[in-house]
Image (cartoon, rainbow over all chains, first blue to last red):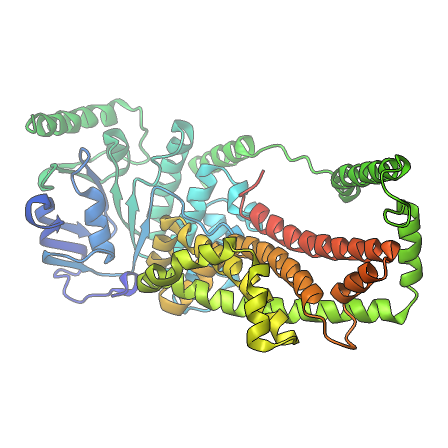
Length: 257
Length: 285
């Protein structure tokens, strides 16, 4: 099944972009079986920015890969209404291609005709118009990750799945990319599911923060973040909500002792 | 654009500016000179040592002539047709033998990198063949094909193909999994994934294999031309053998220099391609 072109009509309400229903996923079998996800249900509105947080082993990445159609679902169902694009922690750019050609390739893989003006537009969106001819290794980590974002957008994805995309970047670059991602999300009307282990980052970015438990991963709590945008990572409001989420997260972690 | 937008754009451009290394690129002439002078110095030293050995009187001058005599002979040889015919014959064999080795090595390499059954069957055999001196194949090759060009091609092929196959296998084995995942996520399957992800990612290692394969092919070819002498077909190997039989030490060494130069030139070409590939991918500083 092609993840990037999975368009399903069965997402129930029209304003639902992703509907996850009673999904379970187990790795391995017999005694060594590990339940990564158990009975996870989640529905995400079109245009919503949802952050998934949890301690290690909570199956955050598994859930993203399931939504992207890369892994197979053991139980339950997932309906995604729109084109899904997945970004990893690593930029995973093709090192033998220039920045421009990396973006073009994403179009070509989808059998779409590479559209030069669209490539330039995407480069402008991520502020890399001067670097189209550069090779990935000539760019900084943040610039590489922005190229990866442009490449994902080149597939005309309207649902963006991000697996700790800023995890490997320095704090300064991260802060700037938060602003950048927020802007692109708003301008392009994307639906974003953003996985992170950084609670503050989740509160900074998300309309909603979903807390997953570990082994097995279940949805334990959800926090609506009704703060005005643009937000700041170090604002008192963000800090306060982040503290609540962290408290719940720690309760979860302690229950494993 | 709003104030916020402009500010954000400045943040980003400022960070980009700070994070990029300050570029300093030398001119082409400078770079060429930097890579050339150590080589020239090494050649000069080798010639000096050669001259000193001759001057020491360790061997008669007709057995071990001094460098300038050898280069004089080389200059005279270069005016004869026979010299160029010999080089052409040898180069033709090298090109044909290496091309066939490239074809077979590539097919076997692809098969091994894709099929675990194939890998178990012939994976270690390929490495075994690579370490086997190809001259050991000549007795069998001569028995099978007689004193013919086919016998020479056979050994050149056996000598070069394993390195080429191994280069490709290593290249495919060491592709970062995240690139394959990215390709899959972007919708590349089957042949598209092969053409646009797997092969370009494996290319530097494959070219490295070709370079090593060339070295083996060239060695096997020289051995073959000395052992398998075909009447009325002058080749570099035949010239070496004749020169020895006639105790023509000048001619012998002149042709050895030709062998060395051709080997080095081809190696330089492969090396340049490989370096370029690696540099484009950020694999070398």
